[in-house]
Image 1 (spheres, rainbow, N blue to C red):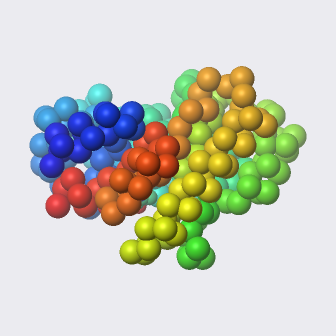
Image 2: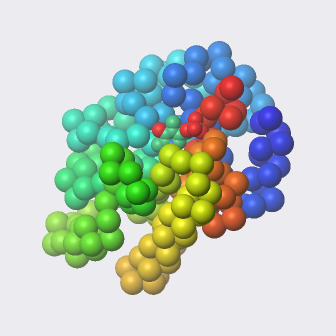
Image 3: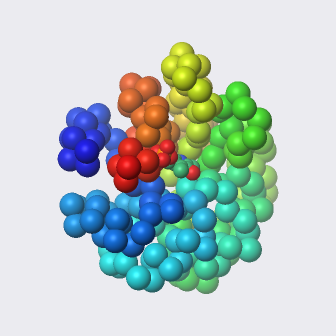
Amino acid sequence: MFSELTDELKTAGAKLVAVSKTQTNEAITALYNSGQRAFGENRVQEMLPKHKALPKDIEWHQIGHLQTNKVKAIAPFVAMIHSVDSLRLLLEIDKEAAKNNRKINVLLQFHIASEDSKYGMNYRKVRAILEDKKFKTISNINICGVMGMATFTEDDTLIRSEFRDLKKIFDKLKRDYFYDNEDFTEISMGMSSDYKIALNEGTTMVRIGSLLFG
Ligand SMILES: *Cc1c(COP(=O)(O)O)cnc(C)c1O
């Protein structure tokens, strides 16, 4: 499965974040030994012991909702935070990144699904953040793009239109706010059940768990 998937993603030019939540260190190590380096976790409490136990060249991606009081623990090593959904969280990440003398890569999470349970912001909220005076003080964050989750449904047409919305949001932000920012390149969309649709709609990063780990 792994090599078929990585071939498919390579052809499409998308990066794989292997979602290792609930997986054992042994299962993660097996994938690591096949060459996988980027792993995604949605809980800080789970990422920390894995980071401690596993090889140091693993890139850890925080993909689940992040509380401000948990930022400090992952700030020394996290490779990317996909789930930024407030100015308050951005300011906290900036503060902790500065303390660790590094820049942290983040994505702005958008609510694109028709379900109302999921996290994420709308365009208006993001625009307000980008135009806030406090945002201009941020100096230890690279905003690398956007992230979104489609509705959990069998309706491919709906999923496709939600991914299209996210691609349009990315293009608009790139044009209006990040045109001269070389970091702003990523669209994190697509999971086990819908990554093929995401590949068609311009994803640059897929977050795949169950399909890989079984
Ligand atoms: C669990 C999870 C995934 C991966 O889901 P699978 O269906 O196992 O591929 C992707 N993104 C987020 C935010 C997740 O929490």
